[in-house]
Length: 192
Image (tube, rainbow, N blue to C red; front, top):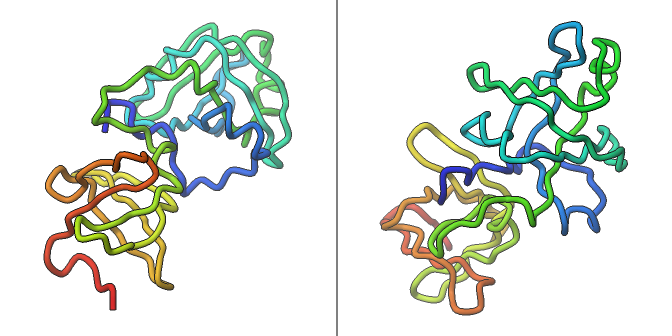
């Protein structure tokens, strides 16, 4: 996984219409206003709040998932694990307060390309997970990060499996690109 592999936190349930999720990726959520000139504090779903500076335009959707509009990003500043954004046209604290809870999305076409063995979290959701021996484990339903590594949440056989994303366990995608091949260490899976 790449430096920005945490672009999407699938524990944050998105209600963005399906046709938009095909074109856009959820990257952050507005949590509160910042200052009196319309700045907003944003919780980014990446390890690096500065990564939001790569995007000059963001699409905002309200908490109900309705498409709101695109905003040009005038400034990005990081403050710990939070980003502070100045969006064009948002000039007062009241306007910023109206955006609390809005989700920030970017076009998939605008996200940086990764190397062949790297993936964004959104690319993993929905992949079937299969062992090197051909045993189907389930489907990736979400991904989250621990300080040590990322964890795949795989649902199958009426169970939920937590699979660490480590090179000796996750082997990569198969030739079709639809299956994620793993070589589980002893005791990781109880497939009975």
